Image (tube, rainbow, N blue to C red):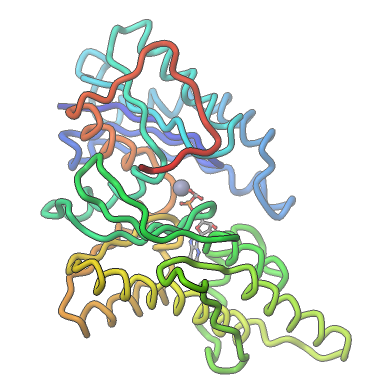
Length: 334
Ligand code: KG4
Ligand code: ZN
């Protein structure tokens, strides 16, 4: 069964054709990164306008790269929440129009569910149940994935998401957007013990995160150095900062996995591309005798293929939508 999928929740217009939730026949991503660089982050209105311009071409290319026409497609899957509302509306409305015109069923897909499903593409053998650390620009969750469409949040962030914390610190260090990616690159040459960073915990909630104090510590380090006329060593501060963020992510995931009895650990979301997180999580899983799964780097960030993967499981579980489908800026994964 072939699913045509569409993603427009942030700054990538992406489409794909995915077979049976696992096999990517095509995946097209039109990134707007260059456009947003001068602003140091995503400008929502610009994002919406670029989606409007790109969406039709991206869908057509996904179909032609897969050697398909709409006649071969069993369902149209679209990201409908959460994300930038103006950006989501472009994809949702396009998918509704396509579904109405063609009579092909419409399948709404939750963005974080699709990030998790990126793993089904990379790891054909992976099946629920497992424990998943979902870390993106807007969310940081520890989620029990009980089935393909059944999720339970066991830990969440009380303030900034991990990706947001990476982006804000990177910006303060003078690194260009996209901050998390550039911070990871620069920090590869840094000494992670050079700067002392706090280790924030949330009282009484051992699986929850709080990154705003960590971000403030990095900003204070930069400001104090400026006032003293001292130079910040960006690779060293970047490495120290990433180490502190990753320590929170790995420690809480380890505790949750032990308490809840999971031996299969999965990473998902844009931050799952982080080299330190992948390395440290691998070491942690090895130490405990657990299996670790992470998406291929090209499927860590936003893409259409992951929407097609999750869309397949939503569709076979009967999750379809009619023409009343709307987009939502926030929505729980549960
Ligand atoms: O999942 P994603 O592509 O979009 C959202 O759904 O938010 O995640 C984007 C986030 C950004 O905050 C970006 O800086 C971060 O993922 N990111 C990284 C890396 N690559 C992307 N953070 C740390 N290290 C990376 N290599
Ligand atoms: Zn995302």
